[in-house]
Structures are given as structure tokens and as C-alpha cells.
Amino acid sequence: IRNLEAGYGKLKVLKNISMHVRKGEIVTIIGANGAGKTTLLSAISGLIKSDSGEILFNDIDIRATAPQKIPALGCVMVPEGRQVFASLSVEENLILGGHVLKKEGKREIEKQLDYQYELFPILKERRDQFAGTLSGGEQQMLAMGRALMSKPSLIMMDEPSTGLAPLVVQEIFRVIVMMKEEGRTVLLVEQNAKAALAIAERGYVLE
Image: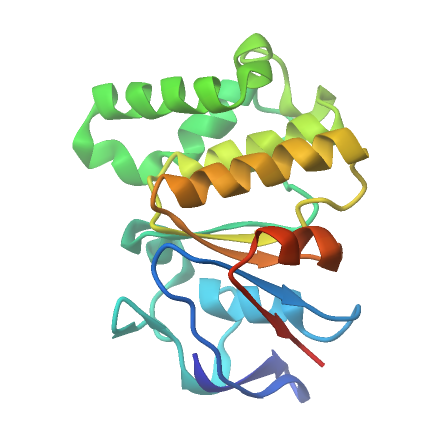
């Protein structure tokens, strides 16, 4: 990211932001509420348009790319507050996350489903349950599994530990480390600075 400026209408939230994330790293962004952490991830995801600067993903400037096309490039986000589809089952939520795999066929989607159930055994137990009836920790796991369904190379996570019990937070962070060990890159926005910096190669403070 080079000299990125973005915000909402006349409110400029990000001012001249430059940073980089190398392949296979866990990089964390910490900062106070309102510093612009979520805005930064939203700009990368194309959910808000940046005013100036560059966002390069695998050397391609993705600022003009439609947000629904960015996951197909290998860049996905687990949003703050989970945002699962409450009235759909756990499995339906996961299948929606794998929609970019349609070209690869049903077998590939089933393979990725099996992988998520291995990673999060509780989701397998709850596969037919409405996502809205899951606990906060289970919803967070579902949101992560849904993002991983598209086989991303970069996964961005926005405040994954918010409102979760310490034991669940440990489990979430264990999976984040496992993602890295499998060769994925993780950009982690997190209020729990101590826990985030303990697993990250580097951190940025957004002021």
C-alpha cells in the first residue's frame, strides 16, 4: 500500500498510509478505536473507494477492482462482528464462501468443506444448524471457515477476538498460526495487542 488516502465522503480517515505485507507473514495492525483500522481493510477489499494512492496485490493495483471480484484474486476478509448469514445453515454459509470455486466443480467445494470441518470440528457437528443460533465463538469460526473456502492466499481479519472468552480466543489464534504454517498470509487487525504481536512477524500502529 502506497500513500493511501480514503474515508467516507468529506471525512478523510486514512491519510498517506504506506505499508507492506510479505507472502507468508502474519502482520498485525493495532490502534485505538476510530484510528481507521477497519477503514483500511475496507479499502483493500474494495468496500470503500480510496481517494488516492495505490493498493497492490501480487503487483496488480486493485483499487478499481469490484469488491465481489477481489476474493477470486485470492484476497478475502473476515469482517468485524462475524456477519454470518443468520437464517442459513452452517454448511450453506460455508458453500457461499466457496462460490468462487464453482468453475472447479462440486468435488473441489466438497473438498474445501471437509477441510473446514477438520479445522473446526464444532462446525461439522453444527452443519445443519442455523448460523444465527451459534455462540459468538462458533460464529467467528464459521466466518473464518467461510473465508477460507475460497482458498485465499491472503486472509484479512478484523478484530477476531472481540467479545470472545479467553479459551475461544486461544483457539482462534491457534488457527491463525496454522494458516501461516500452511503458507497463507494474514493481515490481522486486533485490539488485543499483546496476543496479536505474540504471533505476528511485524506490527503497524495506526494513529
